[in-house]
Structure formats: structure tokens, C-alpha cells
Image (cartoon, rainbow, N blue to C red; front, side, top):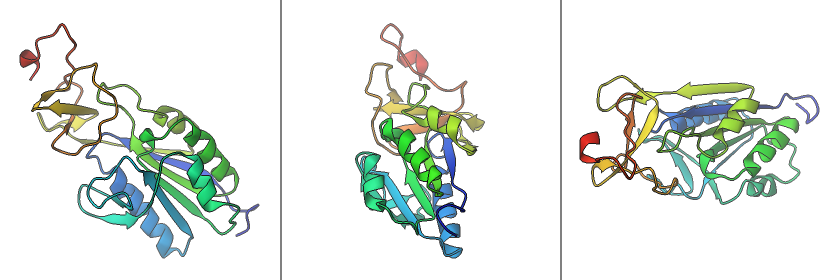
Amino acid sequence: MTLHTRPGRIEVVAGVMFSGKSEELIRRVRRALIAKHQVRVFKSHLDERYDGVYRVSSHTGVSVDAEPIDRPEEILRAIGDAVDIDVVAVDEVQFLDAGIVEVATHLAERGIRVILTGTDTDFRGEPFGMMGHLMAIAEEVTKLQAICVVCGDLACRNQRLVDGRPARWDMPVVMVGGSESYEARCRRCFRIPRHDEDQVALL
């Protein structure tokens, strides 16, 4: 399929932590490889969990090779003018700057299938990075949910914990961590104490 005839598209897989986003990216990448497509996988260098920065890994242990990046423009530099790239997948895009929107759009216009995964809300329950914008311009959006560890309902929030207690509102947005620092919670069980609130009462 030539550059001018193959269809480009943007697919976004979003949701809370522990919802299976990276696992879904890996599934789509593996299916593309089975179809003998040329695939390049990238991830934010901030995510060093599990198998390190050179692999996209899920909480369940599956993984695929990846190239760590600091800025979205590095994706374009890595690909260059290659016309044989069919799929570009990027994990943890919430950590990338606004340039990811332009890069994803440019790749799709070149006829490339772009798969983006990321956490759509931060620990405060607010839109995380450029995820909202990417979801708006994508041809396909898959919203995944985890299970609330408190009540067992569907989880839609990332509960950050510090010493076992809910992190306060004024903490930095970016803090990479796993189950030791975060829990998936539903709207009802989610807690985000402010300065004037009793943190003990919010546990």
C-alpha cells in the first residue's frame, strides 16, 4: 500500500491506571505484526516501571520493545521520511507535551495508523496533559475502566496514596508509580483532601 492510498487514523486508548491500557496497546501492536505491518513503538522516558524504559509493559507482565522519548518531535526524527511504516504506537502520552497533537495528526496524514494510550485524568480527577485533545481528534476512542479497590464498582479515578493516605490537592501532578502509590477507585470512593480538610476523616 503506498503512502497516498493507505488510510491514516488516530486511535486513543484511555482510562485509569490498572485498566489494561498498555495491555491493549501491546495486543494491537502484536496483531499488526502478525499482519506483517511495519511497527514502531515509543513511550515516555518517565515510565521506568516493570521492564524499564525500553519496553512497554502491562501490570499483568506482558511487554513489547519500545523506544523511550522525551519530546513528541523525537518520534518524527526517528521515523524520518520512511514510507514503509504502517503503525506508530505511543504509550503514556499523558506525560508528553502539546506537540504530541501535531505529531499524531502529521503521522495520520501520512497514512500511518497511530495508536496512543494514556491516563486520561490525573490524581485530582482532572484532564491529564493532552489526553482530552487527543480523544477529541481521534477516529476511535476506547475508554477502559478498572475495578474500585474499595467497593468493587467500576473505577474512573486514580487515587494517589502517600503513606497509605490520600494525596493532597496541592501535590505535583506527575508522580510515576504503581500499586504502592496508586489505587483505582470509583467516583464515590475517590478522595482528594484540600488544606482545610481533615485527612483522617477522608480515609
